[in-house]
Image (cartoon, rainbow, N blue to C red; front, side, top):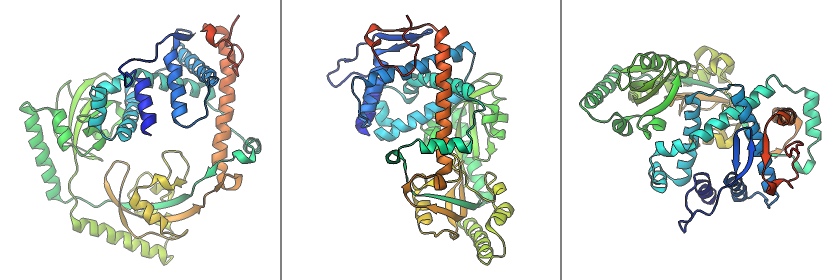
Length: 447
């Protein structure tokens, strides 16, 4: 991981090597429309593949170049078709990229020390790359929109895979849940409001909102960035947060705002008619121990009813669960990372993994403390519906996996057809040094 991370930093961002000299001297390798592919672009990908343990040789650079030619063709057409991505979409992708880098190097401070730049400055180095990637993806979606695969196509795809190339599937589980929230008492809410009023007064007296966000905000993702959550459209924000944000003038600080996340102070950094750039300080009221015990007792009662077969778990979830995302489906937990209802064992927090590992299929857990998708403390019980053992992929157990892969293969074929057609009417020029490449698509080397 460290080696791979260093290569990304050195090549992607053009950092000097250990001797202080830049080893990669750039030249234009190809042009697609008005988009250029540089020698350093190819080297970057080559070194990344090598660092990941992939088998590479000089011929690999031809494959890398062809993949880049396809991406540039998609990007060029996305601009011709006037496709757009929002700044909030770019910011979300940037946040994910920065989170990866911070985890790899150890901390925000180490990352900034390494680059000799602030986090915001580092993000700006990636902004154009992220935006291009989102536009390319959107163009690809337009090309493949409405594409589907039949069951016979899935079977044909599965049969086309050599037996020794079938994927090894790790253990997975499927489960339903009933979630309840402990309530904060009036004193805890008053304490949070008074603390936010004190912080707001300090801001009004000249202290930095960003600095106070780092110190006090309970939103870990934005706190490290001075509370900055980037550009957002109205429908991407909690309704209460959005309502206030779009009334603030640039630089103005809100009064206390309550949302599903907790209590906020909001500062408007900039605003357009349909998007707003804000930072915030989030505080959540403390939960008294007796409130936690009350919720645990309620969940205990539900557990007893289900175990006595007085009510089915999915019916109990629809009746009593306070999780709006799952209760309408009888508490069925849907995996947000890969879709579907199965979860890999590496996708659980340590405390939940321990609980799931100790459950047999059909059993219900005891109530335990957890966290919802908004970071709020919650308690829940889960019913383990299914558990798969590690195995070689097969259609009976892994139909959805192979359906997704068959769909991806079909999409790739459709994009290849589109590329071969579009290259006929797009200006493409490739350096003589790469004209001997055995490209898989015909038409890159125009006479």
